[in-house]
Length: 93
Image (cartoon, rainbow, N blue to C red; front, side, top):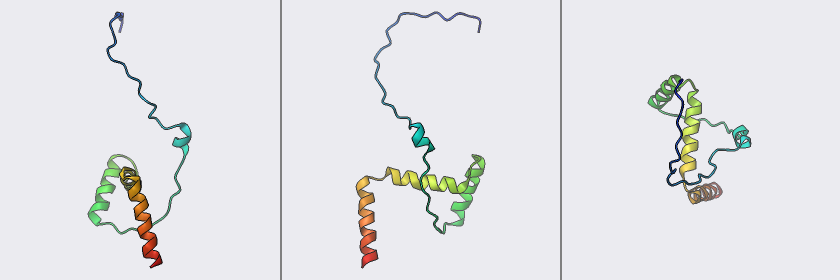
C-alpha cells in the first residue's frame, strides 16, 4: 500500500456514453399494488422455492412474485393487450 501510483498520459481508447439505466429514488420507493390470489402449485415447485428462499434469506412467495413479474415484463406489449381482449370476450359471452 505504500507504493506510489505512477500515472501515464496514455490514450484511453474508444469512449462511449452509457445512458442512465438506474431507477430514480422515486421508482425505488414505489411499491406496486398487490392483489391476493389463491393459486394451487405442485408440491415440488413449492419445495424448490422454499429451499431457494432459505438459501438466499428471503421469502419464497416474494421469489414466486418476482418470477411472475419478470415473465410479464419480458412479454411484448401487444401480447398483454391481446390477452385482456380475450378475457373480456369470454366474460361477456
